[in-house]
Length: 226
Ligand SMILES: [Zn+2]
Image (cartoon, rainbow, N blue to C red; front, top):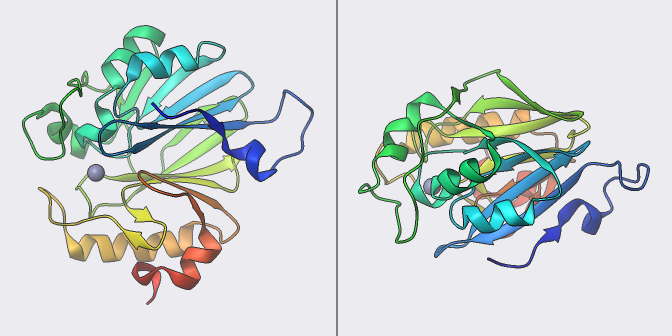
């Protein structure tokens, strides 16, 4: 697992009272460098996409109350660490209903050695649902295309200006559509939606590779040009 970094501190995005402002921690995990994120608000934590190394992520988050584990989609490199992390923290596991089948099929594509089959979700979410930790809220948008059940989380409340986009949008590109339940047509529609739903001033946190800003993607990303 790569060293932990505090993205928000690094970007100086918030200047609230010391020790009380929200924090985003990033862990790069597994054989294909999945970005796992921890969003911490008021000591409560939501983990996004623990694809691998669930035990190590749990240890790194021992100082906060991990309430939610959310997966942006069902591929093994995003759900592979859920089992260990959930066992260690007791957090609620959340994903979309449409990707549960992919997540449970550990022989399916997108799985790699060392990933563990996830439990069934404690709760499934879809369009318009809201997830909360501390003073942060995240609105769920359904973004099929990479998989049928892909979701994006758009920050509100103290998380305003942050979006977790999974493998739908990447810095300068977008997710592949050739895996089971993927669809180029749905991907094009989902990207069009994101162009409207994510504020240009937002920090965009991707499932793999570099993070980016929405303003830059609106200007440069070929998938967002209409
Ligand atoms: Zn994926």
